[in-house]
Length: 121
Image (cartoon, rainbow, N blue to C red; front, side):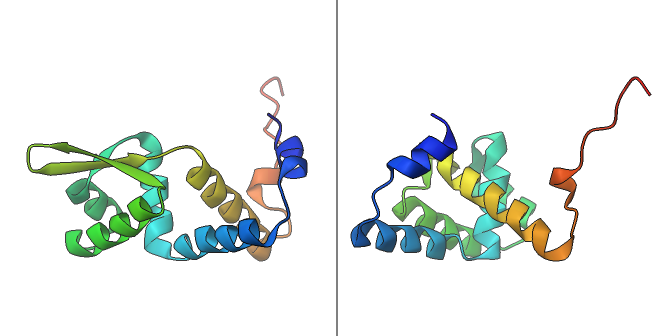
């Protein structure tokens, strides 16, 4: 389904708006943004995620627990290791859209608007 049609089909009720605010609040943390981006490649352990986002495993676990409660990530246990994965594509879409919007605040011609070079020239 095209994004414009999806947007037109959304309800504008107060409850939906409040739930959307909770989603944005959950993503209003740089470590959580980095975790979502790290998980785009697939499932990873807490230790690996801590290395990627350059935070202590205990802190990463706390962020992941919040993302799990918000149903943005899922877990799988293998022995004593817990692996995390994105629950669906929506959190990554939100993060990607936010990063693209952020490019507009620092550059009048953000790179995501740049056209690809012509390979024949």
